[in-house]
Amino acid sequence: MNVFYAKHPDVLSRYAADRFIEQLNKNPKSILGLATGSTPKKMYAYLGEDTRAGKVSFSQARSYNLDEYVGLPGDHPASYRYFMQEHLFSQVDFREGTTFLPNGVAQDLEREALRYDNKIREEGEMDILILGIGSNGHIGFNEPNIFFEAMTHVAELDESTRKDNSRFFDKLEDVPTHAISMGMRVIMQSKIILLMAFGENKAQAIYDTIKGKIDPRVPASILQLHPNATILIDEGAASLLEEADYVRL
Image (cartoon, rainbow, N blue to C red; front, side, top):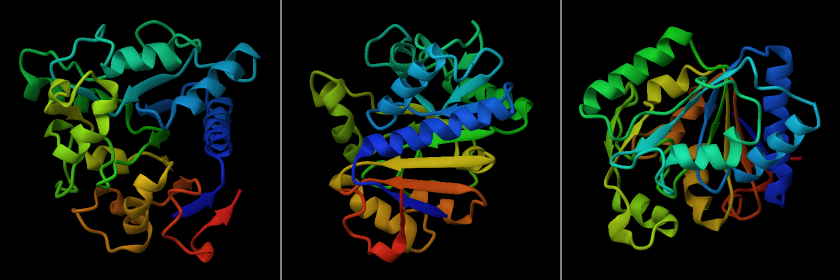
């Protein structure tokens, strides 16, 4: 893995945005893998600015998000569809019908997971994928002890994950207990993976991902086996590492 450090998260967000721009300018029909949460928000803001400045276009691209909460329709303010619409889709020039997320209110959730998985497989593989990481080492909603060969599936969320995400809800009880998540196997088939981690609460997960053994108890550790994975960490996330473990941007 490539591990890059910058003291300020904005530097890392700019770097990640530039990698997406490079990919889209090289192949305008790229398949993009996208994440939600506070970590990629600045990256998405940069992509919106760059689209308006004419530096990049999403008009021929298609995107697939990692996950969606079970039980939240796309117009719910805490849903990931709503987040993506607010922070990226409305800011760039995707064509209608080219941005995809799992349907968290599907009548048959297992069938929906299979449908989403098959749709991604029809594309072949994602050209570039952005990831965050949970404080317990999850990527997407692939929680600890996930089967590394897992495809898209209905995931039960760890209590630590629900507690971490409760800041987006009025109270912990409002946080959904399940989500539909892109599986580890699907993630690992992406050609380029960028993982961003900001803050000291991610430091142990980052240490275990980079320095630990490949272990299902730390799902992100499987990225050690990916041929083109880059980890982007700020001062807090790097606090348990030594300077020799990363390159400064």
